[in-house]
Length: 317
Image (cartoon, rainbow, N blue to C red; front, side, top):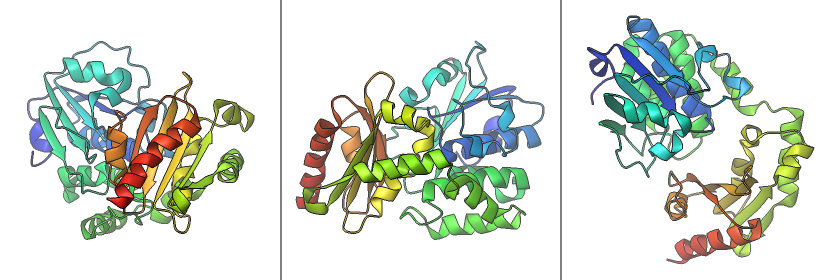
């Protein structure tokens, strides 16, 4: 697949979807694609399906057009799924993927197995938003589309500090800045700014954290009871695992939070020596070499133990 425009020829209806619990890259890439179609292909009926997005992203153009419920049973000409490594991560929107005449997947997860009809998968890319930048083309990127892409790139690169950030990433960011976006405000308002509740739950997570494997790993967890006490939701826990990762001497960070069904959402980060995607895939998860996740059963201490066995094995291989 060379570009998105060629894929839209003869198409009358399009559904756009991303992974469950959408993060900045998911929201940014999906809204960028939606706004591209609405701007340059107004004759196409385009619908975007995502679970509720964090409020910090609601300033993006047409964020109010996102449909959270998948009540519509329409079969689309084309379904574009983005930032999603497999159909199991699409949630209820998977039905649009399964009934569409044609499917496209744009993604950068190393665990993606090219499950769509057309696939634009580059695990070395900083973000799915960077890939959308390539598929749209610089000349078709408006200021509003640029804001969406920039949000996605900022959030999946940790403001351009993760190892996935490349010269191509920075060149793309420069192009987006030249479109007139308020890039410093986007970074402050969507990445760094936290509510009082978020700061308190971060403090709780750090106080509860412990060093494992003689300091090579750090881990902590937040229960549903603690989330209720501090009046926060899972979407407010972004950033905790990254704060753990920057602890001096640590090679891998593990953060768990409890799901409604008693399972635990696992987020892992690496500083280079540990391939956390490989570990996540052993538990039906996925992600990237330096950032991955899964859902696991058991008590937090048991989960930490199982993951540390894998981390230690990699560190001593």
